[in-house]
Length: 345
Image 1 (cartoon, one colour):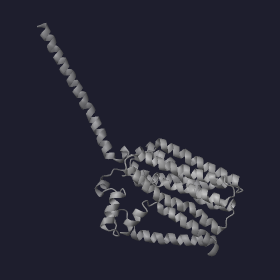
Image 2 (cartoon, helix red, strand yellow; image 1 turned 90 degrees about the vertical axis):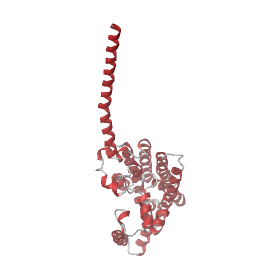
Image 3 (cartoon, rainbow, N blue to C red; image 1 turned 45 degrees about the vertical axis):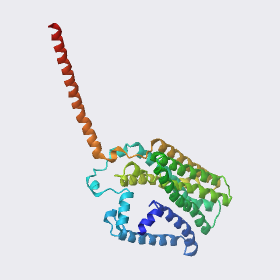
């Protein structure tokens, strides 16, 4: 029953990554100062990773129906609400329609949006402590705690925005597509404005901290928009889509730290301002593209068997329609001959 309650309080599994970032940011500074320097960070989190892996191997399963650690109520809840397919459907599901996915405008828009989001997120998560040190000259302990604040608010906003999105969609006043685009816009423009405000706050520590925290907090709105959009497009292939979109988007995370290093050789405020403007434009442009290409509707290729049936019906209807036309023309001709002979008589 605990899992059921947990899912109601924390409705999106990706929130675990956010709270993990919060804890690691806050704890890292303390570990460095009181537990032997930088090496302690790697030892502690490496050990935590191994412990998590052991728990995962013990309790995780590929499908709720196969889990031995769920009650009947929890299992039924997960099967009905988390997008899992019934076993019969899984057995009959055709291979992944890669061609249709690769040429799908909503999928392409989703990938582009993920690239923009990950670029902005990785820029802040990996380099905010560096900014706090270079520009604001915070101590390591204060740096870690203050760098965790924006991620903590993002985590809370992810929960709140999830409830708001569910409420708006349940009222049937707004379409799923509109709600997804609206909340992704909030998650893209809000952080961009926040980091720009921080860069123009100079060395005012309070103003910078508040700007970063409020701006990055709005990024939590990406959870009930960008993060679940793959399930909107294709419940049958949602896992494949999420892996594809997330994998390509994460590549931008390898670019942003390198770009920050190139743009901030001296760590000055003006150099960092260029970094934040770059992140703002990347998030803004990718969001605009998503607003034109994105969708919250199930795509036709989600059901390949139905597509084949439709094509077969369409192909079969054309000869029949043609023969009907021919028969109709023949009848008209016959009727014409009869009329002609009647007139002659």
